Image (spheres, rainbow, N blue to C red):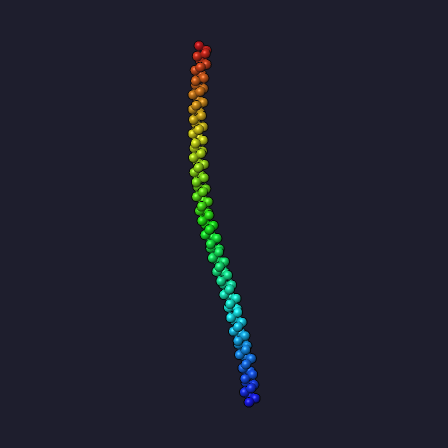
Length: 105
């Protein structure tokens, strides 16, 4: 009986040790799973932010293009206005010259 009790005593701690190892392995796997899930969530958030930034970039590029078109139109209007003023100035100078020539005659 002593052999059996010794064998029983020897196998019991071994079983407890195996259970402890299994529990430790399960806990390690649970921690790993939690870390992986956290990383997956961080990746999703990063992708969401990237998509949002890309959409904002497109919007800003469109807005910039529209502003550039507006600037070009305004510059063309300014140039037309300056040309128009030159024509008017030239006509006025011509009229003034005629008036002066009439006064001198």
